[in-house]
Structure formats: structure tokens, C-alpha cells
Image (cartoon, rainbow, N blue to C red; front, side, top):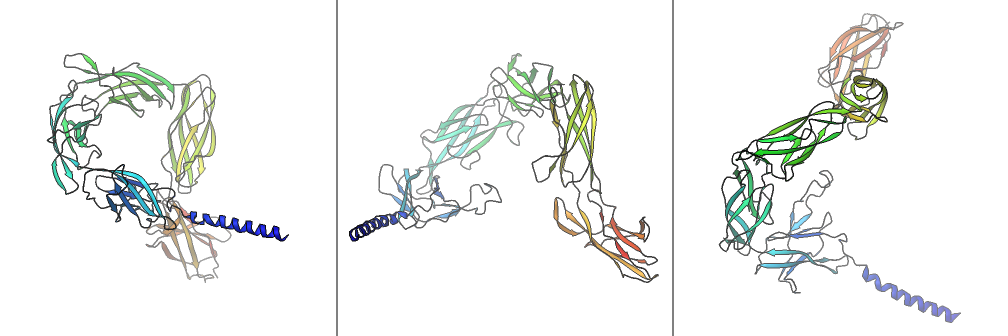
Length: 552
């Protein structure tokens, strides 16, 4: 027994030693989900998210293929969040999570590997090699841009002349940029161009002929020359508005004079866009020219000027295809008749919300090409203003004869709160459902008379009775915030004991804080009540409690 116990003890001790060894391996990277590292022309950027900056953070720069760093960076400054509204403006509680180095002053131009080093959870070094690459070279800047020529649709080529310099980040001096890569672009195309040994460019550039007018201009298109890694409006690039030549007349020719599809759908219609050339013949518009369908989106032409657009079917409103905003062609349009096939849908709805919280709805249900009389099922639906869900509040049936017809569908319902209403035909076999347009928001402001009192109680006949209280209202769509409602008429009603009819005793006006007070002469036992029943168009009415006064 003793030998076994001793052996077990030795085994346990040995195992304990073995288990104790990995405790040093509990050290870990404090940023296990990673971090971002990137560079611009002269700086190193890091972003560790919302986590604290790691301890003893430093960045090594080294030439690719070598081990020894040529520079080490240990000082960083905070930078604003690149997108302060991601995931949302409310959720971004830490708008400054990024850091960056100061502009670097390195001995040599060239490409450098970026290694990031910081302390692990047990102060051991965590090394992330090759997290980014720094291209440390001359920073290009366009100093002159000139466009020679007036492009027009049948000759869209111009000559671009420009000069560019390079800023040396080592000493902030500028010199002509030799063999520098720049991007020459318009809205429709982009192409690389290169400076010569003296930093000069002279090159042809051909527009696509599909560009729209430059913003703020009705005579030309935009042309930009910029460094390769910069954005269009970079201060290192330059842009020009290039006037276009005479715009020829354009013509839209549709394949069909009429389209047919269920109400509320879209029907395809083909066509061709052409223009009148200098020789008098009609020629196809450049491929990629945009035409627009009224409420149906955009379509682009092909090489032969052809396009296929989508025409929205909304009752019998004709379809419209237009060409607008082209810097190369005059505006043109073409119409196509629309004939709804068998279907039904709503084309208009009116809503009325009374001060006593009643919603009245009237929808115009149009049916087209029905093969036989039918009863069309309609849902009356409500969407709360703070929701995307439609809730069915009522169901109606509308009888429709064969062929075409338009019938009114009505509903009167209690007010459920601020929101939108619609009537929707749900569809039936052989009769597809058409549009179900929603109303605008339907709402009024809540009012209440939470404080009301008639005093004294009891009171002697012939003595005055003081009637007082307070009228309050909420804010739009916010039924939890109540404030006094001043400058409003409040009517006071009296009902003698033993009777059922209320009579108007008088009217008073609320003070700025919503309070009101008025006096009457006591004549008989009865109940008093205050009503806000002359509510404005955007407020509900309100009624106070009843207060019984004993007159002796």
C-alpha cells in the first residue's frame, strides 16, 4: 500500500509540475480580434477600436527583405473617427479611436514594411510583422491644367495639357514630377497618364458622350486630373468644366404605342434613342446614355441606341420616357398609352380624424377588365408611426361588375394613435392585386383636463361657486409628455340633480400654464363639468370629471 501511495504521490507531483509549466503560456494578445493599420504618404495610422491603446506601443519601419528597422515610432496622436455615424450616430460613443504618427522624416525615399509591436497581457512583446506598407516618395500635385478643344457628339476628343510637381517629404521641397502617374477622368471614364521627365503632360482624352452636365453648369462636363491615390476633389488635383459644342436634336422612338400589364406592376417597353448628325442622317446615341421612365427608373442605351425601360402601370396614366440632363443631346421624350389588364387596386384615399377620436376612411378601388362580376376583399390596414408593420383593422367587400369600374370603399374606426392608413385589395384567383397607396400620417395632439374642482361643497344658495382646473396637451407623437395648454376656450356645463341634460353655463380661457378659473352663482344642486370641445384642427377634445355640488 505504501509503495502504491508513494507512486501515486510521485505521479501527482510530476503531473503537477507538468501542469504548472503552461501557466506562462496564459499570456495573450490584448487585441485578439485584431486592429487596423494603414499608411498615407507620410504617416502611419492605427485603429484598435474602442479598446485602450496597448502598452509600450511602437512601430518599426524596415526595408522589405531585411530584419533591422531603419526607424522606430513611439509617439502617436488621436485622429477623428473616419465614419462617426457607423453603425449609427447614436451608437458611436467613442468618436476618436484612431491614432497616427507625425509626418515622417526618413533618410531615403522608397518602400518600407510596417511592423507593430506592443506588450501582451503579461508584458511579453506581441509582434505583428508586415501589417502595412509605406510608400515614401514624392507626393504629386497638379499645378496647371488646360483643356484644348471643344468636344461635341461626333468628335469628343480634346487635348489635355498639365504640369505636376512632387513634394519631397524629407524636406518639404517641390520639384517637377518626373514620370509620375496621374489619373485623368470624367464621369464616364478614367485613364492613367504619365508626366515626362520635366513633369509635363500633353495627351488626348476622349469623352464617352454620356456625361451629364457638370454640377452648377448647363454648358459643359467635368474633367479632373489628380494623383492616383487621391479622390476627385483632392486639393492635390485640379478640375475643369469643359464646354461642349452644339447639341444636336435627339429622338426617342418606342417599339409600341401601348403597353398592357396588371395595375400596380411595371411593363417593359423597348425603344431607340437617336440624334441627327451633321450629315442629316439619324445616328444612334452613344452606348450608355441614360433615359428615364416616369417613376419607373433608368435604362441605358446599347451600341445601336436601343434600350428597354420599365413603364409603371398606375391606372391609365400614360407612360413617359425622357432624355434630360445630357451635355451632348437636346432633351426629348416619348409617351406610351397604358392599358391595365385584369386586376384591381386603389388610386386615392382620403382620411378624416375628428376631435372625438373617430377615423373616417374612403378609398377609390378601380377594377379593370374583370371577366365576370366579383366581390373584391379589401383589408383596412394601419401602420404606427414608429413601426414598419401593417396591422389589419377591418375587412370590407366591394362588389365589382364585369369590365372596368371604380367604387368607393369606406370605413369608420376608433383612433389607434398616430400613424398611416391604407386600403389593400388582397387579390383573388385570376384578378391580381394592384396598388395600395398609403395616406400621410394621421394624428392629432392629445388633450386632457386632469385637474377640475367646483367649490365650496356644500354652498348656500345665492353664494358664488368657483370652477377651476387645468387643460393640458402632449407633443406630437409623444403621449408621455404633458404640458399646460394656454390661450384656449374651455366651456363649463351644468346638469341639475335629477335631470339628464347638460346646459352651457359659460366659457373661460386658459392662462399660459393651462389653468382656468371662473365663478357662478349657486342656485340648485347639480354637477359641473369642463369641456375643451372647440378644439383646433390638430387637437383632440377633452372632458373633465363631474363634480357634484350640494346647494343648501
